[in-house]
Every structure is written in C-alpha cells, then in structure tokens.
Image (spheres, rainbow, N blue to C red):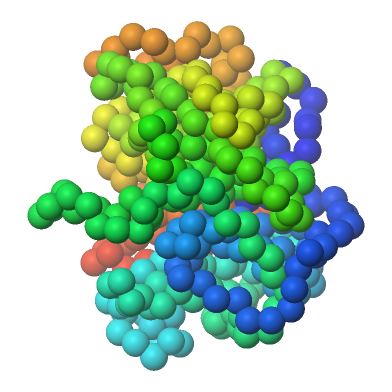
Length: 368
C-alpha cells in the first residue's frame, strides 16, 4: 500500500499519492541475515522499504530492499505463477502457497510472500517479479532490517478438535499498511477484547500495546470483539484520518486513527453490511473521474466497487440486518477469481487471479 497524503474534498483516499522523500527510514536498522518464521501480509514504505508480517513470530520486519530504480508502468501478465515459483524454488506447484502481494512504488516491481511447503515446517520466501515478468527469490542473507515484536500475541498452539482445530497465532497479524510515519497492524491479541489495531511508529523503537476494537455486526445482530479485521485501507473521512476495515460476513467499519492508543477500547462505525457467508480477501482505494472508490475482493461475492462519498453522512448500523445495508456496491463481473490486488499506479491495478483449475495468473488491469 502506497504512502498517502491528505487530498482536498469531503473524502480523500490516502493511498493515491506518490511517496515523498523521507529521511532516516533506515535509522536503527542493522545489516545481516533476516530470519523469518513465516511470511504473511506485505506493505511498502518509501525508498523500497518492505514490511513483512511474520505471523508465526508475531512480528513485523522492515527490510531495505535497495529496489529503488524507477520502472515504467507497462502491461504485465505471468500465467501459471505458482508453477514458475515452484520451478524457481525446486519444488512441486502444490507445495507453493502465495500469501500476499504488494507493488513497490519506487520500482513498480511486484513482491509476493510465499510458503514453500504446506505444513508447520513450510519455509517462508519473498519473491520479486520484475517489470518484464522475471522471477527471483529476494536474498535476505545480508540486508538492512529492523523488527517490531507485537505485545500480547495469542499463543502459538493448536486449539480445538477435528475440523475446528486452529492456531490463534496465525491471526496475530491479518493485514498491515504504512501511513506517513507509522505501520498500522490488524490482528488478534491474547486479551479479552481480542480484535486489535496497532499504531507502530517507524523507524521502529518502542512497540506499545494495541487498541482493542469492537464492532456491531449486523448480519449476526450483535456487538463483537473477537472477530479479526481481514483487510483494511487508510482513508480520510471528512477531515478524519481513518482505517476502513472489512470483516468476515461482511461488515465494513470505520475507525478514526486518532483513537488508536495503547490499551484503549473503541467502537467502530459500521458503514456497510455487504452480505453474509463471505470472506473479504484484499482491498485497495483509488480515484477515477473525480470520485473515490474501494475495490474489495471477496471469497464468494467477486469484486465489489464501492463509492466512498457517503461515508461521512451515513448513520452507523446498530440493528440486525437480514442481507445488505449502508454503502452500496457494484460487482465487477469481468474481474473474477481475484485473490490479491494492489495499485500499480493511478490507473492500473496488479491482481493475482485464479482461473480454470485454480491456476493463478499475475497480471496488470485497468482500474474499473
């Protein structure tokens, strides 16, 4: 996700902006090998600084990639991306799991967080896809990096039985974004109000506790404190820098960033219920024809194009909702099977699309 700036208008989307030059981003970084237990959500800061969410370690790792040479925006299509990654890493395609994708705004190269293997011994790898479609594994043996350990992370242990077995640590970080001088982190903690948003200053120094967040889930007809944010974007709502977060089944909720304070407990404003039996996968924001939009990829409802212009005026949902309510959306029928997406520039998105036989294609598409 790109670094945003405040734009004029009632609602301006922060992620529309080219990175400014910022000094001192590598302050506190040390050079040497980077060790990851896992590689999940990704985000970028200026100067090719890549943030990797190591969910198994409950940490965010900042890596100075050195990938800062500006590249031209040109059409890209890499079919069978999982097969190509498998060949690069010397394994079978069914042993490759792509966890997230992010575009480096400094170079326009695409980065993928990958698991080589499917079990507890899976090896995390960061893959870079260059402008021409060439793939390479990012060498982490000698790079500048720093690390933020998350407090109050859930235990790294399997709980439940049978099909209900899960490891809460895998949701210690569900999404991340960089905003001006901070890393915003969504996930679960080990506290009673488990759903958490953290505001971590960067360069990393001290990591304080997160903010426990509560939402009203219209489809469930109740307030919830344990459901994790699945994906989010920073927005300006009126004059209010905010996080707009999507949850399973599918509430869309606004949280003012000024309320994110260590140890605080806050309630979000549910601005939409977008339908139950659905899991949001990824979300970006963009501007087209003078209006601001979100693109929200979902497990069972395709790609939703959502106008943000009514967020300020809309009343929060506080009563049970049988289906949908609040902000409306348009389904982009031509965009099917999208697992991941990120903005390549103001007019183009990069997507990871699932096609026939679940084959994955990485390609650029014009924003709808």
